[in-house]
Amino acid sequence: MKKLCLLAGLLYYISGSAFAQITGSIRIEEPEVEVSESGYEPYVSLSFPGSQPMAEIGCPQLPYVTRSYVIPVDARVTGVQVVHLSKRLFPGYYRIVPAQPPVPTDNVETSSDFQINDSLYASSGGYPGERVRILYDGYDQGYHIVTVGIYPVEYRPASREVYLCDIDYMLEYSVAAARNGSATVLPKQSRQRADRVRNYIRSYVRNPEQVSEFAPAAEVREAVNGVTICREGNRSVTPMSLSVMEEVVPDYLIITNEALKPAFQKLADWKTAKGVPAIIKTTEEIMNEYPGSDLPGL
Image (cartoon, rainbow, N blue to C red; front, side):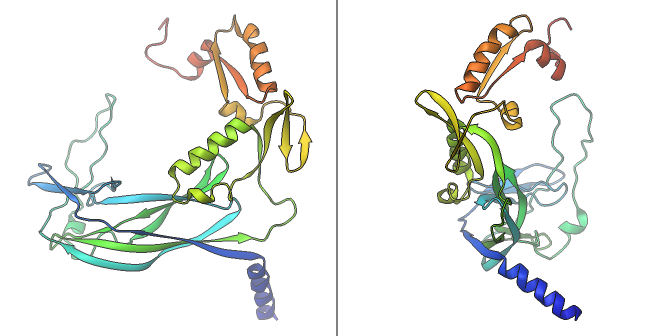
């Protein structure tokens, strides 16, 4: 009976979900080699266009890339995997520089000792051990964003060999079938903001053509015959007070002092009523919330 119940639950889950995938690939040419005098002998660092260095302290500072994708708001990421992998030996032998702690910009004292993972540098296995992994799965301005880390350089410390990898990968996710009241709805926002956020998301994801398709549901303020209304599907509603999102990232920010705040409040209210969320920040509030060494009177 237990097995039957489990099977029924699994079938219900599968029937209520849709599975989808996004594929990608990376091919790199010869990386740039830079020699540095870190530690007791020369080390080299590798890089290629669009890469950034790995930062695990004491471990080889190899280049890797990140790629972000937008997926449906209610999607659940099930994994990322390598579909095809081919390696080729990069001519030469290299002692890759180990990543070091970041240098602080303030006066805090830190250890200046050169750090290296001796056991890793003595190993003959390939580093890093994985070629792709999920680095981020969250939300940006209401859009569901997944960032994948891709590691196309493999280093074998004991032999000092470097292999360049051509990688085809696949990001997989599932979307539950639509249920009444389950959609995520953002706070009201102006048409200007909705367009700006959409363009911002398109600027950094690898699938910009799907941004509109996967946009979160939202009430969008529009001007009709000079009067601002909100669109929510086919329904028109009267704009209310500022939402939490608009308070945090307004379309219009006024900075003044406490004495002049009442005079500017009329402007802020008028802007908000027109569909341009506006807030006022006073210099006194800024000084209380963001202490600094150059504040007047200190």
